[in-house]
Amino acid sequence: MSAQEAESLRTDAPPRPEWRGQLPVVAVVALGGAIGATARYALSLWWPLQPGGFPWATFWTNVVGCAVIGVFMVLITDVWVAHRLVRPFFGTGVLGGFTTFSTYAVDIRNLVDAGHPGTGLAYLAGTLFAALTAVWLAATATRRVLKRMQS
Image (cartoon, rainbow, N blue to C red; front, top):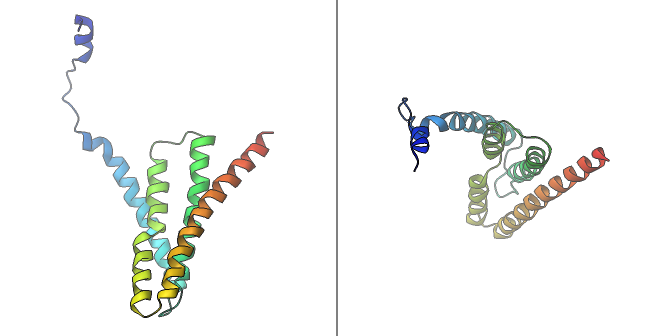
């Protein structure tokens, strides 16, 4: 190592703890998660689950959330460079709090335990298929719309 390289590595300021650099990211994920989870909870109050019935509120929450993720990811990766906190806030926080794997899993268990294994299996497969299809369709449609706008 040359003297010039060694000099460039020296600093008079004490090293900053790594967690302090992550604090804004954790804060925006928490804020976004609170917003998303509150929206999901409001939807579950508006569209309550009937005992033994198909959990439509959770199903549509996950499908719509996946579609929005598809659009969002295309926009922030293909269209514009987002601020470093946009993706953690909206993608991880808001949409991560809005969509729910845990409620999905509990709903399946509750359906099976209540003697509705067919409904539970339909919900299991239907949600997976619909959510993956939604993210793919939304991303594909967004790319096509953007391509047409550029032409």
